[in-house]
Structure formats: C-alpha cells, structure tokens
Image 1 (cartoon, rainbow, N blue to C red):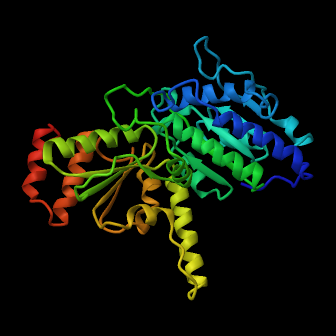
Image 2: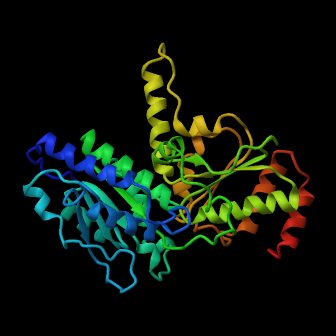
Image 3: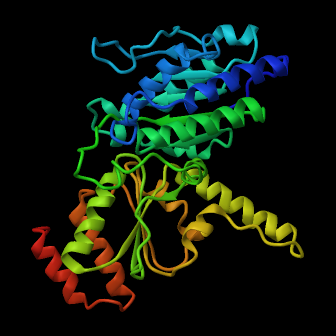
Length: 366
C-alpha cells in the first residue's frame, strides 16, 4: 500500500498534551476487571474512560464505522463516522473501531485514517466461514505491511498494554504507521482458567506484551518439557492443553501469550541484520530469544489465523518448533494440542511413541 502524502507536522506541544491525557486515562484503575472480560468489552470501557476521564475530554478522536449499535453493546461510545477532520488539525490520537473482513475493506479504513492511528477490528465476533471472521489474505497482508504493527490480544489487560504502547510509539515518539488490533468477545469463565483470571499485568509483563510475548504460567521448580504459545482467543485453548499435559501425563509446560507473532519475527530479523552489520559490537538479542532461548524444549505456537502467522517465529526458536493454525487438518482444540506436544516429545526421544497412540485413543481423536 502506498504511503499517504506528507501532511504539515502538528504542534508538538499539542500532540504531547493530548497523548499524555490519554495515557493518564488508561493508567487509571479500571472500571472492569480487565483480565476477566473479553478484549472487546474491555476496549469499550477504555474508550469510555478516554472520553470522560479528567483531562482526557477531546484528547482523542474515536471513529466507529461498519458497526451497528446494539443497546447492550460495549462499543456504544460517542464516536464520529470519519477521521477526515484530523487531516486539518492537530495530530490528535485516533482510535478507529471497525469490522473490515477483507483487505479492500481495511484499505478503505486506512485511507480515511491516513494510515495512522489505532485500528481495532471486531470482525472475529461475526459469524463467518473464514478464520477469525476475515479473508485469509487479510492477516497475510497485515504481516507484510511494515507500517503496520498487528496484534491479537487475549485479555483486556493486553489491550491496555498495547494501547499505551501504540500511543507512545505513534504520538510521543512520532513514528509513522498504524497499529491493528483483532478484538474478540468471549468472556473468561471465572475459575476455569487460572491464567485468564490472574492479577493485572505487571509493568514488566505489559512491556513484554507490547513487544509480542510474555509468560503467563507461574514459575515452577520443575524443568519445563514443552512450551505452548497462544494468541488471542487461542490462549485459553493453549492453557487447557497445558492442564491436560500436567494432569494426564505429568508433563510440565510453560504457557506464553503471544499477542503479535509478526512483531516478534520483525524484531528478530532486525536483530540478526544489526548483528551482521556490527560483528564487533555486543550482539543484540531479539525479544523472542530472550523469552525462549533458556531451553531447547519443543515450542508449539498456536494462532486463530493460518499457521503461517505463528510460523513466522520458527526460525528464531531453539529446539523443535511446530506452528498450528486454523488451516490445520484437525480442529484446534486442547486435546489435539496435547497430542501435538506428546508427538514432539516423542520425536525428540523424550517419550515412547506408544504414548501418542494411547493419547489419540484416550481423547477419542481417531
């Protein structure tokens, strides 16, 4: 996609004041327990706080397009129908709520937004025969646009961390481009998933989430035998698979939330290129390597999109790597992921193959 024509730079003090007001509103105690509600509902609550919080009134422009309002809709916030006024005023932060299911529809949104701002799509909430409610070309297109930073958050707290990072990157550091968030609307079942209802993200985890991944399973004295990574709604499935592995097979796992495989892959590629150009300098370590290089245990990376999205980090992971996506031959479920992990361990010689045969029968997958 071609870049938009350059516009006159906004007054830096105006842009700085508006974004600081937004950051302050997002730092306030949440009105909702954001680890226990869906990203969509959490985003609606945050959009409301951005409009009504002290000092945040008129600090951000919210656009709502292609989304029919419902009386109980969490996205029922005061919004305009277009971002065009931003072309003629200060560089006010932009939050664009939309539902594009195709590259063409998303390009229309980006033309309106001048390819700048925070684009949040809830296409996943609509009935569709496509994975996550969008044509398969759309996530591939997003990963190829270097002015786009795409995310697939799993929780409300991840949404908060990503919004804060986006505001700082786009409007404090004045970097070009836009952030894209795929927003799902499935509430966590309290008590069912220890990872989904844990305490709010620490500052370190929030920073790590904005870089693409952070660990959600607690520290354990047991040596990790397999690492499970999940993005968006798939994180809950990954957590269920980790429980099966522990309860049924006594296999210790690490669970990682990966809200952006694309950002992880780009960061790793950039680190490799920098190290190649600066052979005498201290090597840069990519974020995905900082997270996963302490072990050679197999890594299973799961996404609700096609497996090539999760597969982007495969070349930067020690040990056996398996990407799982919606285009797999089998359903992406906790039992299948558990069997996939058992097969990876068997291929590494850490388990007998008979364990995989038994698991297939036990979970009625044959």
